[in-house]
Length: 333
Image (tube, rainbow, N blue to C red; front, side, top):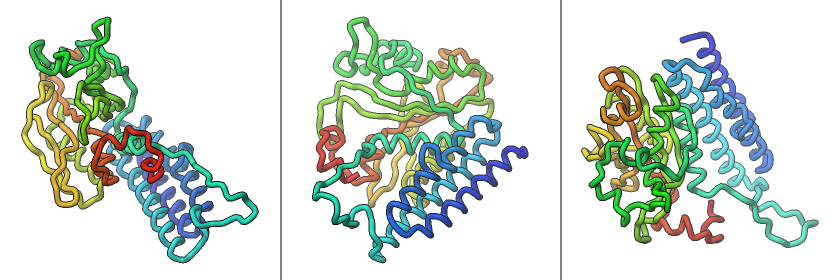
């Protein structure tokens, strides 16, 4: 590894050591929140290291990403542990502290929606693994949404009862996989590590597990020597960061027009297998549509449902709760 890479890894370890020591010495909730912002906020010491990933050589991003993510995980766990310690010791917290000089009015603080916080966490993990994030349009061409992804004209997904079309003939993207055509054109010659996320739209009947608007994170990795083993490693790293190191994954053979071989992936959560994403190796037709020679390049792709991940992590049993804008529900997060 280069001197620059070793320096960043060393900085990550030092930043974690400093953060944990300060967090463990915190005596109240306000001090603990200040430390969280100082180390994990937008301009925090560990967050800055994550942003520096763009300058790390491509073949060393994995090692650096693991080190920075480990630092973030150590600081996060220290904060949660100190919260419990302060609560058990009876130290004043934001919830039980009383200022008798203030009027008896409940103060409401704005917080991230559980879907937004889930998307941000997935983005952070993937950026730590060396992927570059960009936003892409929600209104797409049929080529980007279907043709470039090897979806034939007769495919039922293209029918009006499945897809929203605009008056001009464009498509409300049915999946963030549509970003692949943009990424292949924008990034040019591989290696490419790219992700995006956001809203998708389908003509679904609303029930406990379906909604016409939902959120996805999609990723692609393209290089000369990428295999299904690389895909599995990446998904294990993502899943363990989201659900814990002891998480179990199940890969089930599946079919997608844009990948082969393809697999749907389930996590074992509270005794049940729950599907969270679809994945596979990019088809030659997709690489060709994006201007790459499939004889020279290969890649993997996957798309993960952010709504489903948020439901699993927070024990939400009805997707409609995420969109009803009910204050009592949102206040829990």
